[in-house]
Amino acid sequence: MPRPIEALIHLPHLAHNLARARACAPDAQVWAVVKANAYGHGIENVFEAFRAADGIALLDLDEAQRVRALGWRGPILLLEGCFEARDLELCSRLKLWHAVHCEQQIDWLAMHKTHEPHRVFLKMNSGMNRLGFTPQAFRAAWTRLNALPQVDEISLMTHFSDADAQRFGQDGIAHQVAAFQTATADLPGERSLSNSAATLRYNQLGHVRADWVRAGIMSYGGVPDYPEHDATHWDLKPGMSLRAKVIGVQQLQPGDTVGYGSSFTADKAMRIGTVACGYADGYPRHAGTGTPVLVDGLRSRTVGRVSMDMLAVDLSDLPQAGFGSEVTLWGQSSRGAVLGIDEVAKAAGTIGYELMCALTKRVPVTVVHGD
Ligand SMILES: *Cc1c(COP(=O)(O)O)cnc(C)c1O
Image 1 (cartoon, rainbow, N blue to C red):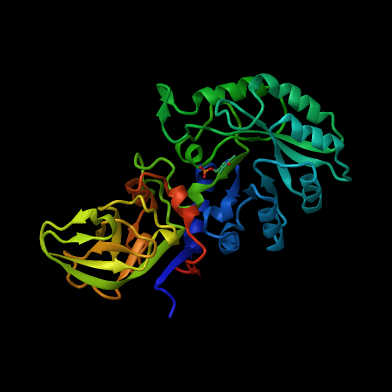
Image 2 (tube, rainbow, N blue to C red; image 1 turned 120 degrees about the vertical axis):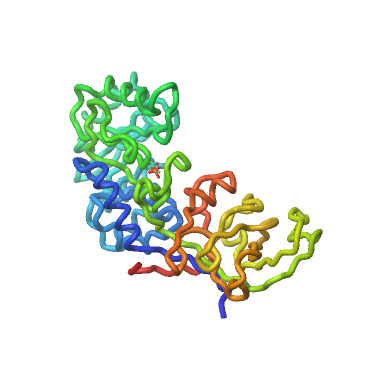
């Protein structure tokens, strides 16, 4: 029998979340962002649920090929564009739209031989200082691109650093929206600004049109602005559940310790369950004592250090629980109770994004079509 651990991918939840993105931005088209192997869910696993998207956005050419192999004929956007000149051949062959964020990428396009000009998304660095042309350099880049026979339509995009919180004494996007607006006001082309946080939190971006929103984490049920808001507030449902079972039970006396480093000491008699899930499955080792879990759908907590293949949970207040009990590390229990991945992430000092992406290969994945 395989180790009792599995990840479930909930297709109806993913479809629901994508519909939420659409509802938040009714005038925009929606990119389902499936980079990092669909945030750890598996591109092939989520594809069915995201068919309703207007486009699929990702980073790796390999992932773009996988999406085409699934039969997707709609738009695919390479969010970081090409990494070397010959990537453009694949863009031509697979009809990939691609970001253009630096001069080198324009140089490669200028030398590229293609019969069909490419649709590109010219990226502005409006303040995040990661990728893109500064507002001052943006127009020159646009003019250069616009003169190339290799280029068809030019769309305009930027990315927010602080859409998830109030910063700079105001909302976190105003200064970037203003920079974008000023530098692009008289340029033609579709606009794409918002990630999940901006899609959920901001209905309007000043006077900037939002033709495309890029729904990443929200599509998977992750909450970009947790703990200010939670999944119930935004009406998002977990795309992934990680479930394992109790494979051993121990009775502790006061003074007994649990796990490596004896980091937890019982101060009273306790009953704990050893669960078949550890950091080699992608569960965060930094999750300390007290990280929430569901045991047979009821809330409990971890105790002691997470080890490679196991972790311990407190069963003291759950007399019915024991050997074989289901432990939901995040997501939905088989009884329907939900433990938000963001809550677990917070206890481990990270974000839901990282936990989803960290699920490891050895965890078998089941795609769930119903509730
Ligand atoms: C990953 C990514 C997104 C999606 O971000 P979420 O916070 O997951 O919604 C949007 N745009 C770009 C450029 C990205 O790289």
